[in-house]
Image 1 (cartoon, rainbow, N blue to C red):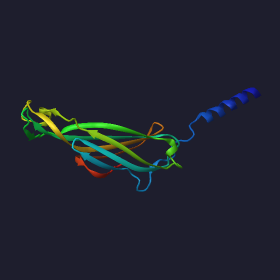
Image 2 (image 1 turned 90 degrees about the vertical axis):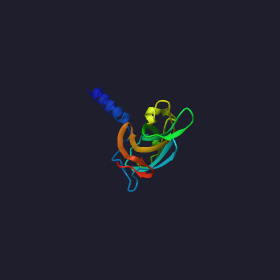
Image 3 (image 1 turned 60 degrees about the vertical axis):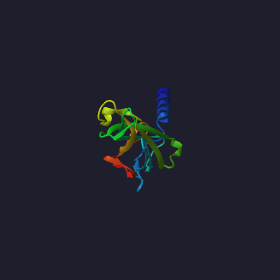
Image 4 (image 1 turned 45 degrees about the vertical axis):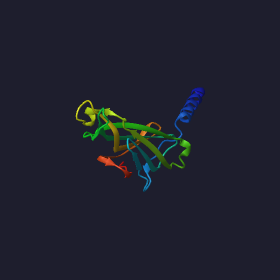
Length: 179
């Protein structure tokens, strides 16, 4: 009987030792630490660099998926090189860029992070997609507008936050995300 008690005690101690060392206690954004993103656009490509400050994290890597979506307008160009403005907005994306932050970068449950994402419009689209007069035209010279940014923040495979900003007319400059 004494052996069984010792074996059970050893098994329970081993099970406790194999449990994760720490998990997120009560993660939340620090005051003023809700994510903001700076959007930069040049013709057919855009990038967003987002920052935020979280506290209450456990020990484990943090993964931040930054997703951008947008639309592009194109110039209609015919086979003779003549150009005319297109009329349709062409959806671009979504594209998701993951950023992994090592558990070693979390100090006393605190993390200030920087994560980036990018979005690129195709250099050409069909004339019909761009709203050109007929199929002999091609949509060229895209002008991209970011319409949506979403950040999903995970620790240990558990979704902690989903933060986003959306504007069908476009997002630009510094954008605060809502969580």
